[in-house]
Image 1 (cartoon, one colour):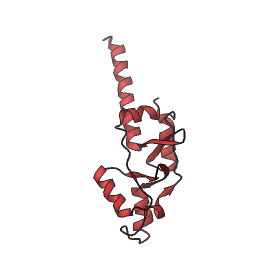
Image 2 (cartoon, one colour):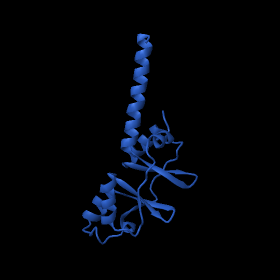
Image 3 (cartoon, one colour):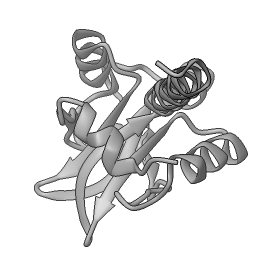
Length: 143
């Protein structure tokens, strides 16, 4: 099974982030513009949290807060679960399933280096299985 580093190598390494003092509305605009479901929350160079669509639904809309007035700092997920580039894809799938999360920031030696989503993990697994099946078909048919 592959490693998180394999997913990061296949991605364009773009991460999108907001400042904790940005408004929820500003974060949502960036999420729409970049077509992502989560943003990393960075204070200068320090990774301090994550803001997801789920945070918005549960901590803004359902609580009656105004997205144009609420800072990300108030509703972000602090100290999110992270993985390293050496974690297996299988471990990430298990972690995401058991913790009901869709995004995992990737940290290497205390430094944020990327983020993977459940979509990235599923895509990797499908491609890996397709490769195995093709090799088995070639082996069986002798081609």
